[in-house]
Image (cartoon, rainbow, N blue to C red; front, side):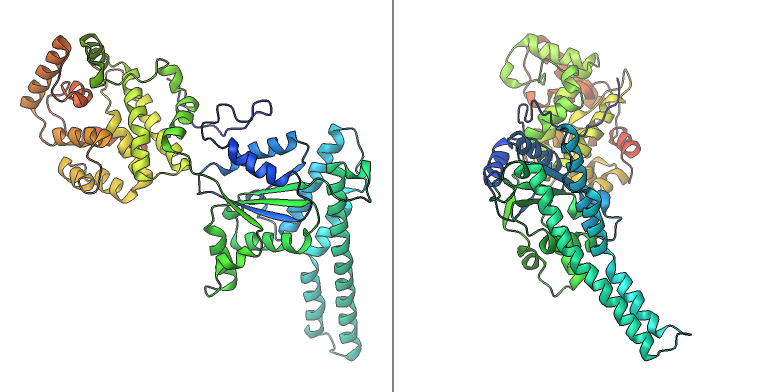
Length: 475
């Protein structure tokens, strides 16, 4: 089998939402309705937990806006935080969008993008130059004469004058870019703004604190222009922390940030069951178990179905392993409160575990799912189990506060059996499985998958199960 990983999903312009497994199309419609007729300056804060899929949603929202002829400028703040001033990154993104528009429609930008960039650089650099001019007065070897002092002041005034002029040029350049992208310059350049230009800023909460705060301040100071709408995505936690790191812990970060945002929208958190469907398709499991869920269910009530299930496990039919893992994953991920990115990483670990089983090597999907999710949801407990793979210590870790039904009950039952496993238990398991196969019944039917696997072992320690994770996900 070929190993894979979760690909970065890129929405298709012709099929933006697909089946919309996360049910976010309605969210985009809400924001699109708000934005499409916006003619004033407006800043929207889009909040979602880390790893909740904000980037993909913003890509989908961008396509929706472009479909109704609302131009979008996209800025990946994290990719540009090596710069000292985010103003340059904002202007460069606008210039690139203008160039794309000009090429697509065989048009010529009314003013060169170099002028806009030059203005931004002038705004970004003068403070350093002013400092150099002023400090030169006190440089050893420089006679601190009245003439020298006046020369430094004159130089500083010249720089400040350039900065004031550049500020005006910058605002005018942004307005011209808005007009060019929205088509206003082709209709009535002196008339009212009827359509906005949207600037999407993603990954701001991953940037250096000083860069993130300065980005917001630059937007406030230079982009308060009719018809310029910002959508700024963050997790809602890192930005307030960035404010405190810049201005001191006594500053209320959230209150400080409120003056930058006109509207705050919380992206709904998808359920683990919804996201499992995406993972199922993305990792190619649909090709492995195209028939869907194959897990034994007491409700089947058919001897042939039970016999098929037991035979599948005994013959190392991996489809049953994948099916059990798919059944358990959303339940365990939900209980541990895994975010989307954590779920993707845990699912990757389960995928690797199953794909690396030997041809005649029994897998324990429920336990694999539990350990993988524990790795990213309760690292301290995962560490304790991996370092001391004793069944009793394992049960101690999951014995308090955990559900007593569903997949957790299966996991607890498995570990309980491992704690006392030996030849008598192996013989009993063989009898139970043979009875279930022959007569189609089992008192504890929900544990059939474990019993069918455990019958292969004369003696088994939990270490035989956890050693794979010691290799695959070491700490």
